[in-house]
Image 1 (cartoon, rainbow, N blue to C red):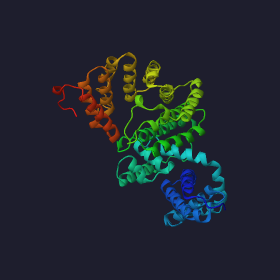
Image 2: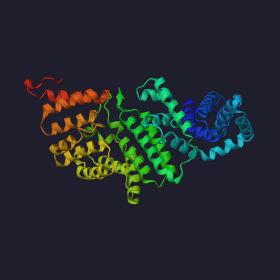
Image 3: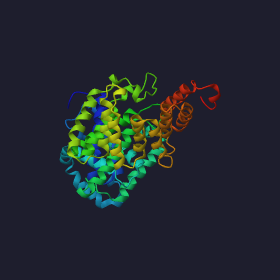
Image 4: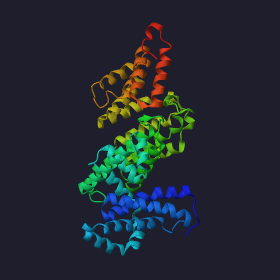
Length: 425
């Protein structure tokens, strides 16, 4: 035994080991729900015993052995599963060596678990919840808080996701080469959504949820380590690093939103930017450029500009034109309109924005009104800008975003003649 560690160290170790152990247990017993219960019990036992007795020589093997025993006890208690009982009893004769051997495949088990949680058969909402629960180690309450739903609602969502996996008879293994591309794209999409929700929360009093964005980066690193030659995996990790590098400059002392053009760039994480640029530089020459690489390249152009005025908007517009050609994402079209305005004037950007009016995927999104307000202000239509800043504020669930938008409306409204202020804040 080692010397007694600090409580935070044990908590960190358990969070790191839990998905690895869960992957091993699910792979052996093929029962996601039973495996998760067993791993939770093993983690609770560790949280009680390790601070008192010290860490075992092989913490992962310890957890795996305890979880194996818990699942076997569960199987033995069900008389209808006598055949599985005998199989489990046979396996228990080899629990210790199996647990020790399992430590050799920890990354494989974590990656397999991630692929299972992000299976295309699940809805994005279910996949995100299950990934954060099983692989990220977040509690159901933490996930529910992140997405502003009751804990019972989130518990039902996670339960349905696990049942969907069980009903689908998906084998617990890495997908075949023929399936891997489709499954990997689903994994990356879920990680992308988790990061976006963490970086800019869709609702609530805080602009960001650091636990979600940090977890997304950690999980993407795991995928990148296991898929080092996949250019889009590297592109997504680079995108996250280059975007998250600005986090300290995005809010003021009171948590208020600070837009990109007004941020103190000395607060940007230069080490993170360097890592993201290096990943991107190593990836782009390999060919097969995809959407995540292009988004990362756009983020890199922003990050490498010494000032907002020095931003290379023509290059950003060129990248958005490429991205628009390979992605039907309306957010890409929205951001392209901004780049177009910065290069060719606000009127041109507003023309592109008009094309999104009839797109039901984004027509009622607050960012459409926010961008229109910004472009109208650039075009000199302050009255129209006030109207759309107010409309955007009414559509967002994020308190920092709403406060920022209302502040912009108030700023412009104060400049208007009194007769033009009707309906303004």
